[in-house]
Image (tube, rainbow, N blue to C red; front, top):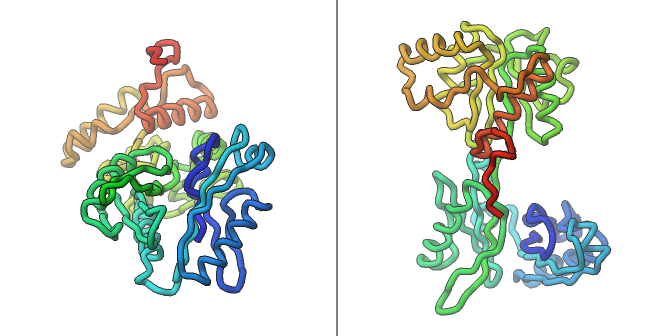
Length: 342
């Protein structure tokens, strides 16, 4: 397994790119753009398999190659090449990737820590999991603190940790579920909302109990369309800090059982289409059903920012803008009112 762990002058999103090379020479993925860079990585991967020894490659790139992987000018990249026994559950890399994958599938971010020198080791940290070791308890404790600071966000990167009196480099790779938008109610507002979210790169899911509304023709950009009892579908979803949820049915009977499920999740945003008069009544009913005040405070009703929206497209823009603002911890106010910090 070859992993791009560092770049100079490029977007940090490129770090974490992987290439897999097996003993027969089959290749999956790429750490950069192909060409001479990946050719050298493939050669190093074959040697790592023969010697059963990892290697850290440092390569200088010319302007052309650098530009093609997002770097603004010539620079350097580092690639960690490690032998992996994919069929062995005891392999530290295989085990770590499995644990991290389970956390991401459950809607939680995870950080995998890998040493850039010495034998392959892995430490996986999430909100609920601490798995593996870097070979030393004190190093594990320091790495855990650094990894926990990355769980809320930030790029994968190399960080230094003191080991036996000297500073050693470790790659901290943050893995997280893709930001997703779940829309309950396949309405005329949901259609432009899903299309706009798709343009922003969100994973979109449409949920409705009516199969004639929740169709691929109406929602060509949706990643998933689910037809069935909405509250039951909601109960089966893993909604975490990377989930934005909007209810657009405008129907109490539809919304209330779904909200009772949603408000108990860790979804980053929960909004309901409705009027200012409808909101207090809905909140009062949920309170009478035993929903805690802390959960009710998360509910956005009426949904969206006040932009004077009238058409379905304008309402969708208002809803998506508020959802993104809440996700990033912003108020959604005018940019001119922001305090200048730089």
